[in-house]
Image (cartoon, rainbow, N blue to C red; front, top):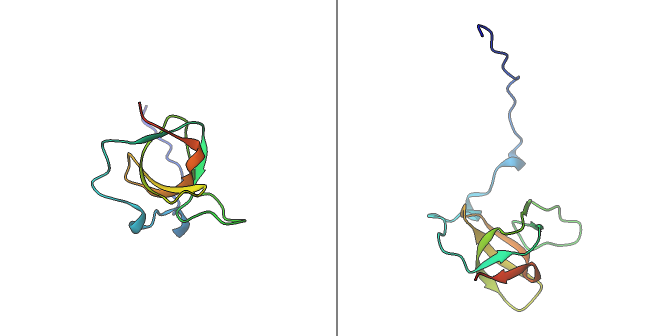
Amino acid sequence: MNRVIRPKASVLPESALVPDKKIIEPPPNQFTHEVVAEQPYYYNAPAQATPQEGRFPAGTKVVLLRHDGGPVCQVADGRGLVVATAYDGLRPCR
């Protein structure tokens, strides 16, 4: 137990940072919808060949912030992350 092996330190690229304008504070504590099945999210509305920023696991609770009737909506999750995702992949919280 005298010896601890530490991993080599590395610096993450700029792309690993969440833009400040995509975080709301304080994060929501009441939610309007939940994610039905795992689905991707994007910092901006997805366009062809736009890589996803991450994925919501099924059951993730979100607040619906904006939906104009199209396939994409804007939501905030419990961390305060504001992103675009597919509206059809959400259902109202019970």
